[in-house]
Amino acid sequence: MTTNAPANALDYNARSRAFKIFSAIVLAIFAIIWIIPLVFALDTSLKPEGEIAAHPTSWWSSHFSFHAYTEVVKGTPIMTWYLNSLIIAVLTVIITLVVCSMIGFALAQTRFSGRITVFGFVLAGLLIPGSILVLPLYQIVHEMHLLNTYWAMALPAVSAPVAVFIFESFFSGLPRELIEAARIDGASWFGIYWRVCLPLCRPAMAAVAIFTFVGSWNNFLWPLLCMSNVDQMTIPVGMATVAGGFGILYAQVMATAVLGALPLFVVFLLFQRHIVQGIAGTGIK
Image (cartoon, rainbow, N blue to C red; front, side):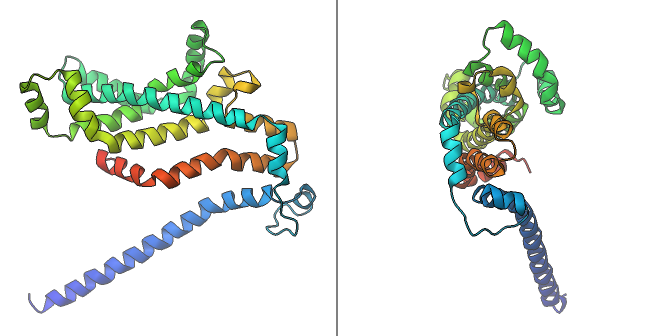
């Protein structure tokens, strides 16, 4: 046993190093696959239209410039689209955090008749494609006279099964003794949720907030149906109008795409640590 121990240790270390090298190679390949389209869009947006038409797959140009970005900013209300997307995304994040965290807390810490059935319906919501709900949601929003308003964009996001599942998983992992001690001290269920549990679930809140913000920012179909006014469009819908209006002016189309993705890139750079902590803290792998 003692003579085999060093050999087994060396073998384990060698396999560990080999696995790390293999993982790094796989990650590098996928990173290159994901980065190439972004770099190509940025490269195309900086090239003159004539060079793009003559050599569409070429990466080099002798006349790189920001002319396409200038034309997009001057020719479209892109700053208004930015503001609309920001307001809608922030409003959606606030409503989702409040509603879904309360639902997740109720499912995780309280016991009521039909709890399992309710949680089953929440999980079933993960299996329903969002496009199926577009028509009934549109009819509801139309009857409520909310078309062409920010509320038409934010309220349907309340039904977020993924957010409920994340909060339920996080609240279920909290010590039961903590909840019972608060109940013995006379705290109400809302007091326990607001003063005890909610401050402890900041990683989950950060993860849900970031995912909700990105989903709201990238949403295209629903804003296209609800927002008919040009000044109320979001970035994805505005990008579609730019593509249709500019036609074959690929530099301006790519410039609009880069400008639309830039805020999300900044969000991920600033909050990537919170995303990892939130997912790890909820036990989702």
